[in-house]
Image (tube, rainbow, N blue to C red; front, side, top):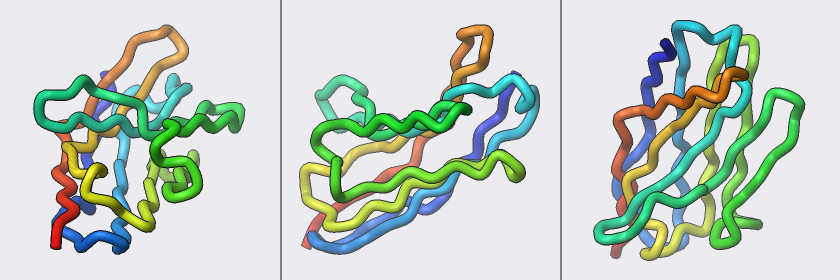
Length: 116
């Protein structure tokens, strides 16, 4: 089992920035993928960014050039720096972890609202 605790969501104006963080505990020695997905009302959950243990990073097309994912393996955390936020970035953001076995875990989600 892996437990995930997210922080950093909130309300921000268009063009602003937010930083999300996620701390993992439990069977953390088996973690491979750490990342973020998001889900807007009425929409499917979509990839925002994820990083593999070997260093490979993948971004969703809509956030490339604006968001940056970072991972600290010593502290078992993953962060998402979100810049130049747009109203369409409004969603619940979920931290996710994928183990080497293929099992996945999700955080409870943190709301990000981009509005003036």
